[in-house]
Image (tube, rainbow, N blue to C red; front, side, top):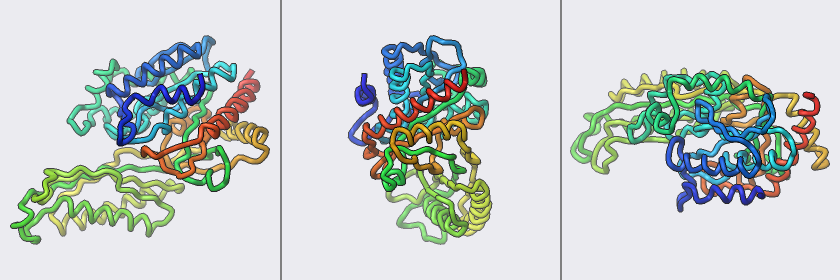
Length: 396
């Protein structure tokens, strides 16, 4: 089976006119599990599911193994490569390389439904906050209930940590999410580290009023206040410098055309190479929110939904990837810091891990237009296979 055929097997699952939607703990997510099991069967691997819902396709040898893979869940209206490319490539590696590799699909990497990014890898490494189980989706479903309906036990999530001992190390292949590789004319690149990240959830509580008859001085406009905070978040980020700020999602109540908004939930994302900048940005944003709340009479509550101080990837694995890449391509492979969050980065805090990116001509990701040339992905597979062969030989 080819890489193209493996990816094509996922296309009927959750793909519509607006893109791919495979949110965690849904019917679409469960359908990808059947695809994973079929890929494992054709590759001669045995499937297991750990207590956090991560899927493992394991070789018929004693652990620890080297692991490869990524995730199969998506954002809302996403693309077909972010995540699935790494899992499909993992099965190609296990099938072609003749190496004892475990292919892993991590649960709920995107966190799109419950705002729980890298859920499975965090559980695997023992850093998942149990408080996230109380989070609810847009329909009011609690995460604890969703994973229970999916066959998991919320009170045994911590047991996933024991499975990490099965891995000697891990390498993830992923679509590039900017244009640096394309600009460099390189089919693949190696990630040195992940940037520091912080995601906020901000709740605004105002009062619903008639949009036509309520004078501005009498309003407690949650949406107008949220708009002001969004602009301030970007301006503070620009003043600090070297900080990328995005107001990424907003929910409004009652969301009626003739009503002043009574409530807003807003998510804001901040990322930087410097781990000190997101906390400094947050401190200034809180000060601004206090002044804004006083002037608008809208309550503003800011909470940290998730954060990471950034993570360097294994120098040893990167050295082998560089050697393999230069041997195959005849020139050095570019390196870069990645500003997205990934399961490999979570694992890198506990075990040797690395990432290889595949060229993306437009840089578009998390959207239906995201695209990679499979010839570039094949190059990535060959680089990883060569590097893993050398790593496994050294381990003997």
